[in-house]
Image (tube, rainbow, N blue to C red; front, top):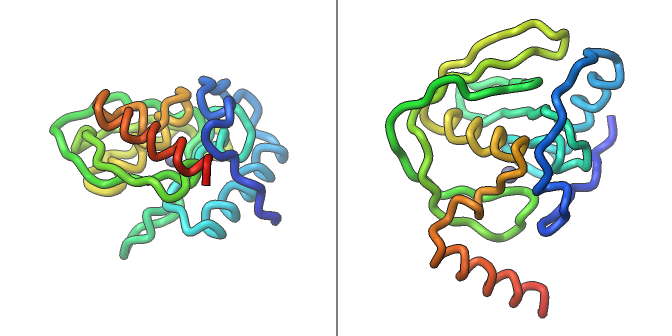
Length: 165
Ligand code: ZN
């Protein structure tokens, strides 16, 4: 299946809240295949549908640690979270920029699989951070939106410089 071009900041689709998925059909499975291929081709550990130009509540994650596996989440919701952690994040849609983001340490996520079967994940560590980052995408929120005002100003300066060069 083909790799799809990535939508890059400040593409407006990245700021749009996505629509819930209601049909678990072959079109959804094709889209998931494209998203998985695009994630791996770009060496990402997660990808949300708006990043490939589709404003739907879908994300794929593979943190590529020992024992981890590919997770396909349709209509995911964080139903519980606890603790605090911060770590350096980046995003395939904001190339070359990384910064430290505060997140919950543990999350519970409810979602549906590609066949529409509900499932639940309890995660901590890298997977918990990745789930929060990707589910933010589905709400039109980017990791830079979670920076302090001062750091967000630094990002804007950095971005203007990038655009100019
Ligand atoms: Zn991202």
